[in-house]
Length: 208
Image (cartoon, rainbow, N blue to C red):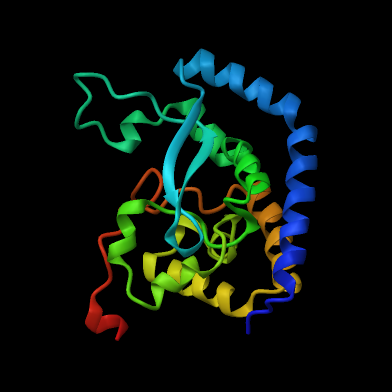
């Protein structure tokens, strides 16, 4: 069951942790920014509109890991655009460090369902759409249960479970498990995709 009384505490923790995190990781982010600029050129940051709480859009900020499409690259896949350095950034999760700014601003939380694409909003079932009842997170229950090795139904089930079980104990468990997942570099890519497959919608008769 969700705990409304925990939400102000959760937000206070997000502000404190993201503020400290931005200061502590500033030298690392500077080094990563230089490396991205050398490997991929400008811009260094990847910016994209993503749905936040209640589906309201915000601008997600991460380090760029894919090369920019040129005139001859209009049909290039994500796997073709992802450079070896970009793969390494993703495997270490260093590309996620700028999202601490999103947490500080209030767009995201440290823990919550991962923000996906705006185009997915009208593809969710009513149950799946409940993932937007809370702020999206830098990490979440789905990420520590398999990340991109999970299929979409499994991910959304974990997201809704998080909404229903929201509380300090679960957040702490997810954060500790995230550290282990990052160190082991688990679940970075789907079995047959460089990141994860496009979500085209669930069959309504399967989720009714």
